[in-house]
Image (cartoon, rainbow, N blue to C red; front, top):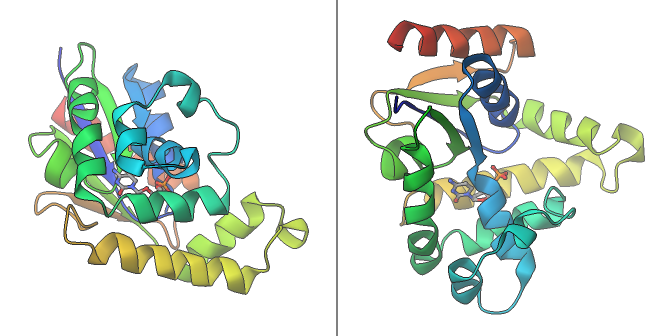
Length: 198
Ligand code: DC
């Protein structure tokens, strides 16, 4: 069976948590496509060459989740040749046998416009920055909350404003706003949407 769940949305909206829960629930494979861009961003050198020669070791680095890696990813993600180099791998993953969940920015619009289920997960910038701040240790976080909020807004502007594959909901995406939802509530909405289509 081929079945693709496309989950898009801005940074720290809850895409990762929802994607993993949906993949677990239905036994689908999961691809965090942001990790591809993060790996290209932290590799250094020519980003197009980095994207064309990405290895499993690049994707296993333990510094991919840092704020710096997120910013670097967002910067290399505006380069059309970088996006083109990562496209075929993502499409193959999406149509693999047994079902797949991909989360990112352009999965429902560009990578997999034919996905069986498309979700757009969002939340206010303040809530997203607060979650990222907690994740990074709260008062022990390396950056104060205000810096993290500024970075979230900067990344939103770049990801939504770029010419190639900007972040936006697909016309047929179900929107899940997690600003005032618990994780369990958001996951339940996503699982219900997939179950309804299966
Ligand atoms: O989801 P994330 O925070 O790990 O993504 C990091 C950056 O990578 C994000 O700011 C923009 C880019 N990205 C993208 O352009 N397209 C995707 N499908 C996934 C991520």
